[in-house]
Length: 144
Image (cartoon, rainbow, N blue to C red; front, top):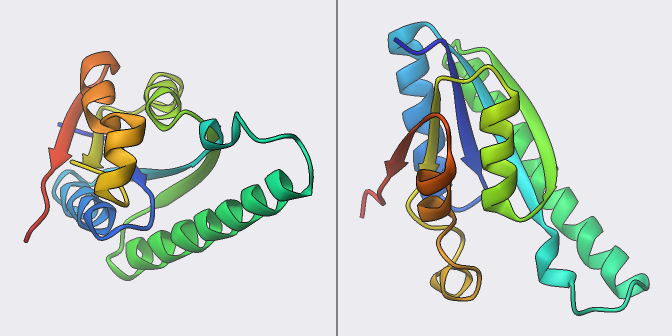
């Protein structure tokens, strides 16, 4: 039985599918959902710390807040309690860290992120989480 479910979202269609799966599981188990969005700051490591970095980070943070707001609204309409978290760093590390620090029993995430290019450049975040999470991980595949 799951009481707290962590779902990783990034605004992609597959993460929307993971979110709906987490909400469905929460309804079955009468669980609370914790949604995490990670601003992948590793993408900026080679850029100088100037206005460009700040503008890019601000845009990603704004995108993250929009995704978290949408997730909260979806959970609310389905009668599920949700807490949201914005993290920064390497997505895999931050998801595993959240799974360790929060009282979650299950981690739900998509099989890949926003694009196939992200997956090639950054490695598979879902594979990293499966390999390193101390909690059970459910990887949701694309419904297409």
